[in-house]
Image (cartoon, rainbow, N blue to C red):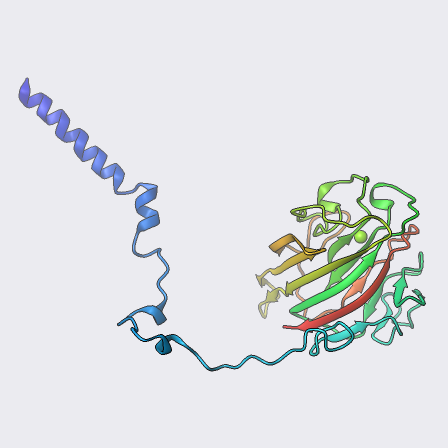
Length: 270
Ligand code: MG
């Protein structure tokens, strides 16, 4: 009987050991999966100057070098003209309203506008304002949008006391990513968007090998944290990702009297 008991115990121990060899904690700690920085292997330096670099020297950028825009930015709109823009539908001169206060306002039903220049990876700054005198509700209250490369929309909407589907609310990546917070200022005041965007990459056959990635800061609040853009951002249907190269920045005329205004638009190519 003792021998039988001993046998059972040994089988149990063996079984536990076998189980522990494939446990999740072992997997996480396995040598193959930890991060090893090759530059920090070998003999560890003992003098401070051995870990201090003097190149490459980054370029100097004056943060407010161009009336508030960084000195190396492309100023797309400073309030004085539409020189950097054209109508999206027929490439003619922009017919949106150019205002005396250095802003522009969507002209209803004339169509979107786009930049003449095309861009890939960028840092983008712009400011937008929904009207103080409110009309419409849901998606029809001051709806506009900022389209990266002409096809990926960061939503502009007056969401103040105005609920809608959350993946279409202000600062959403339209119908793909809900923002992390609602960070709008009161209607009638100026919002800021600061965006870091990395374009998708495609192989020679047109297959996507790397998705676009975007980070959005709305009035200083992180609302999109390095999220993957899965494709276009249509009102109906799934995102699509046909291959493309550089594309323009596009601003939306939603066609329902949005009266959204924009100002101070600049971009830095990354
Ligand atoms: Mg929109």
